[in-house]
Length: 462
Image 1 (cartoon, rainbow, N blue to C red):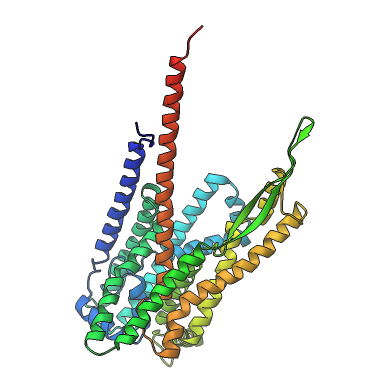
Image 2 (image 1 turned 90 degrees about the vertical axis):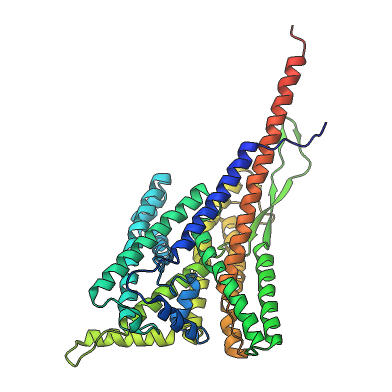
């Protein structure tokens, strides 16, 4: 008879239902991306954006990151960016603002309260960002002619803002449902779906450009080779660890003690922050683009106040300096990534708590005294590897802009997009494997319990 553990059908069924729920949720999201807000000439807008693809305008960048939702002026045009921006603000405030810091320590109830604050702030940011988009589009800003808007006056602004706010809140709810009832992180999966939706179009463009002699075959091969190399690098670095040696003190039982201390290690990932810095940086840049486009279109008359003139100048400066591929944009994006790498790593890993846990369990780092000295040592190691991890994320995210500015190569697969897509797929595979391992463990335990019960039944009773 085979000794292979019998699969736990209930666990397997649960995994299938989670995957099916994830697929259904993403299908709903993609269907919504094709529903436009009222009063927009979608065909004219698509033609304008198609002409801008090679120039790397702000609107083309937003369209790529939203999975084509901007091109169709979709109800999901804002995507989850307001939610991500709100999460950034709440997390930063939870470190510098004592009431929120105390709320974070209150366990499940505190986390629910912070989630509620994040939702309120998401609604506010969606209203601000949606209003800026609607007014800028109506005024012909963001590289889009005002003729694509068929409804004039405040009616379009009201319709668009309410629709986009509703779409953002629905996506936030959908992401929470994916995290709870599906598999993977819901918000990351929605961003992943947006990125992947543009891959077929990018591949088709490359082959079409090569076929029409708009791009040399060698250039196409070089771009494909670079993308594959970046994917390999991301997979390699995401698995990289710094293993800190850990020894356990010798155990003594009665008059006997073990002759050797137990040795193990504490794994510290090179990129402990994951894709969060890239997502946070992209969200803040998109917010800056939106506000700049809104400010530069303020109607100025000779009677306008000095404050309005200053705001318009700030808008012009932001729109011209922080466009995609500009030096100021690359510097700001790099700073954001590095900052959020260190910030989010500090949130993820508490060196003082880890050092105390090691001390209580009788573990120590060889050559380092337990307690505060271990905490300082872990901080030092973590700072070093986080620095290299931040440089790695920055290099991946800025690679297309660097190659475009230096070699003239036009990339239609952003470094940020490749990084997010690969890491999300790796996390998804890890979660599926964890579910399968849990299923095998439950099956093995069930078989062991059955064997023990049969053995007890066969044993003679006295």
